[in-house]
Length: 280
Ligand SMILES: [Zn+2]
Image (cartoon, rainbow, N blue to C red; front, side, top):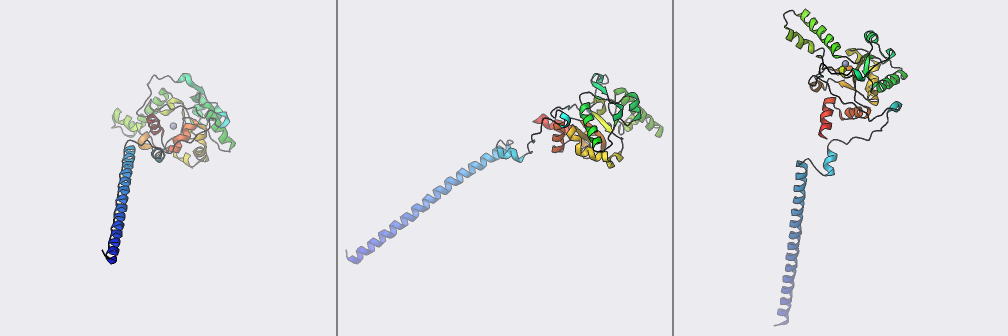
């Protein structure tokens, strides 16, 4: 072999070795790429399974409902902020005719009432929640707002009287109505006996039962402060399909301070909230 031939052979070997190195590097890169692809598809699979099953990871939980803030255990005037009463009465959940609530009632001092009929017969309220209602009215007065109880507890008999009066009014307006038709028409304006939240002693109308309440400083004050004393505006127009009751800006219901704040934070009505906590 001449010197020239030997040189050619060396160059050929170098080219061959270089090609081998390039091929090896390419194969290694392909293997790394394939392994990565398999691992990331396995991750995605796991994520899909976790979100389909309601999500167990912390990322999924935080993307749902924001968790409740921690509320203080004491409200204004030393009131227990964790105390709550979530008794539900509505058109679908009436109280029995013989339901005895009298034992838990107390008479509201007349200075807190502005309805002469209730002043005469004695306006009543659940005795466990009066301290909350009293603290709320006192605070409104301190702010120069003339908040008064218009209509608190209503017994079955009282509801029956109000309902029958409305039935009679409907019949007088249209003498062709049957009893059943007149009752159905009356029920759109006055709650059927046993289905009024006033029966629980946990609700009250303030100042007047009229749409004009919404234009008063009392309404404005309640919108801002009622939850601090455990009360929610029970019937909004937005929730009428759920509550079955027209918008009543004057009707407030005690649920408890921290519960009221939570219901308002979630933007729910009582029916929705009870469903919500039932599912927790
Ligand atoms: Zn009411």
